[in-house]
Length: 435
Ligand code: UD1
Image (cartoon, rainbow, N blue to C red):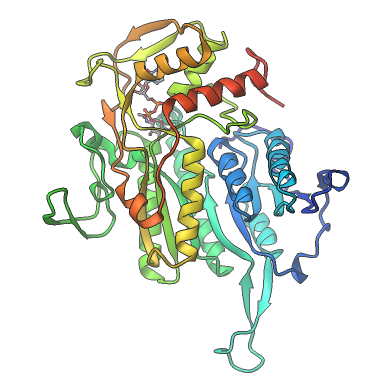
């Protein structure tokens, strides 16, 4: 997300899609009263930042898994057209199965707009009378069953230049938002975290385990089966963006400790790349990207003349930095696995972190080679020195997610590259889809 102006950002408006699967009745409406939410028993997953790169792929997987979704997005780093594509993909998926599509609601709003959030969440309240309550006493209950929060700024370089913007949105915004969720009794929360929380520990070259960064004291068995105790904290965070992710995790951990009704799963993403196999959703930021894959694609489409390779003197096989690249659809499915585990009670209440990575490392040059093969094109390179704040290697130990969430990656780097080439072909190189 970002604070670029957009005419819809300040307005809170609901776009509603019908769940009826006939094409004639499927047109998207802008309508504030199109469904009697109060009378319905339907449950929803709230997705903040649901039109962004990871958010939109997660929304698609949520729909495919049968979840009704409510998206809140301020369009600051996404486009309204993503909603239409998402809806079309969902509809096609369910049409081919002759099944009705789950509900999808969009509110164009900033998650920091307290009044708007209360109004939106108020639409999903149902009166509930619990047997434990005294006669006549009623407690409000939400039909929002869980929240996935993607609504954070994510540019490392911008965070260095404008730290307050990052702390205000990512950290202060989260605190306020959780208070509102609390008041609506919504306490199942999936947080978009990042491998950045491991800071300079990544430089050790070892696969990163969740216990390398904890917020409370934690005991674990290391790879030799020896029980170790780690204290909360982390060292070597290299930029304000990374610190916001660490702070948010710490805040959520404290919240879950104070109120045992909260279940918080912080998903530490490694390096998401690729796009939906349809090539209709993809990474389409508003600003100039700095992450490797979108920069490579700019070179491929002729927007940039050359790819700058930052560092060829790392202690890796080819000297370029190594990352754990993960297909965004695998990553999206990690969120579905996390929600399912929380709803089934397979993860304990409280705060828990999970690495979402493949456990395999690929270098910058591996990525270049894979994109060149998939596109049958040559990527011109310029070798530069190391980028400030970069680590040489960052690869996940993904065992915890596999064991506790029953999730692991399925797609290869080659598949990632093939899918992004589809995306580019669909949206006619060199112009990227901006609506
Ligand atoms: C970066 C952030 C990380 C954040 C993640 C979000 C830093 C230090 N870290 O991770 O906190 O969670 O993005 O997606 O920025 N590269 C090039 N040329 C380019 C771009 C990148 O050689 O034009 C290299 C980088 O130097 C790095 C590797 O590619 O070695 C991966 O870079 P990037 O995609 O930015 O991801 P991270 O640095 O891992």
